Structures are given as C-alpha cells and as structure tokens.
Image (cartoon, rainbow, N blue to C red):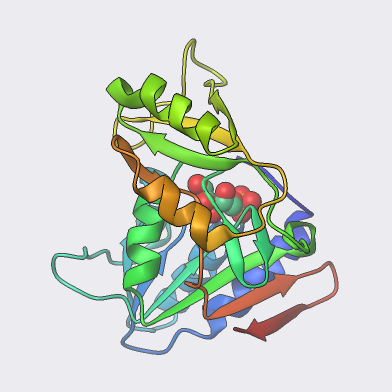
Length: 226
Ligand SMILES: O=C[C@H](O)[C@H](O)[C@H](O)COP(=O)(O)O
C-alpha cells in the first residue's frame, strides 16, 4: 500500500538505514512502502556477498524478502541485531504505526532488536502524535474494546477492507479499530491504557522504542539519533 510522501524520499530513507546493517547481522524486516526499500537494498547487498538473515514482520515483508533473496529466520532461533521499519507518524521519537495492520508483529520484532531504526519521509514528522491509533482486537472483542476506547476519549472505527467486502482481517486473524484521539498529550499513558484492555492484541503506539529516525527527502536522508 502507498502512503505518505514521495517514493524517492522513502527510498532514500530505506537505503540509508540498510547501509547501517553490518555483515553477520540478523535484521528485523519492517512492513510498508518505506521498509520495502530497505528490504530491496538488503537483498542487493546479499547478492554482493553480505551475510545477513531477516526476521519478517508480516506476510508482505516475508514475501518480499524471499523475492530478493534474504535468508529468513524467526524469533525462536535468533535475536535481531537491528530492525528497520516504517511509521505513519513520528513525534519526539515516538511513533504511530499500523497503517498496514502489521503493528503487532512489528512491535514484537522492533522491540526485540538491539537497535530499532525507523525509516520515514518528511511527511510523517509531526510536533505531536495525532493520527488515528490502530488497535488490533480479537474478533469477539470488537464491541467491548470500542466502548472502552470511547471511555478513554477516542473515536474507534472498524477498518474496512478495500478489495473485499467487510473488515480488514490481520495476518493474525484479528480486526483493527482505528481510534482517533486527536492530539495525544501523553502517548506513554495512552499506550499503557490501551495495552490493559482485555481483547486488545496490540496497538500502534510505539513509545520510547526507536533508537534512530532516518528521514528521507527528495534530496537526501538524515539520521536523528534518539
Ligand atoms: O502496518 C504497517 C506499518 O506499521 C508500516 O510500517 C507503516 O504503516 C508505514 O508504512 P509506509 O512506509 O508505507 O508509509
């Protein structure tokens, strides 16, 4: 799916982060159009002899990794040295993710990595997080979780599929509520509240996880260490 700024800006961010991967490392492979550039760049370095293994965060990243020849492993067998992943919004180093409904596995892999590199074009940068927060819920939990989200001040909307009738079903077989909290004053507090709701598998607030943000523009890519 295409979201955010220009493909050129995404490519610069993705390739700059892929350049930071060292020989012999295990790499968490994020999901989305920006992370895809990093995966393709890693595939080219594998072709030229770099010895890396990937851990996929979604069906999409697994298939792309296979296509470009990155050997895959799992969290059962390896710990990622580094993870490279996109974001829907970035503010003060905190993120909203899950525009592609992959945030549950992404958070698992990104949090497990020794270093988590975010790749984003400039359109993703904000002063405060304010995009709707994707919340993955067990199908039976849709209504109770939606009611709790309203109590927390959010406006939940079941994500509809685009080329299928009915809702988006995640790689894990669950549903997604996109929850609009408008400007989020306390991302850490909201993250804790959302995680505490029964039936919530994972939400798209990534607070205090990023180690560096690679920001791409049409001209270059810059790195902001966190
Ligand atoms: O579920 C999807 C992920 O969190 C993506 O990393 C995020 O939506 C950013 O995607 P993109 O790079 O396509 O804007």
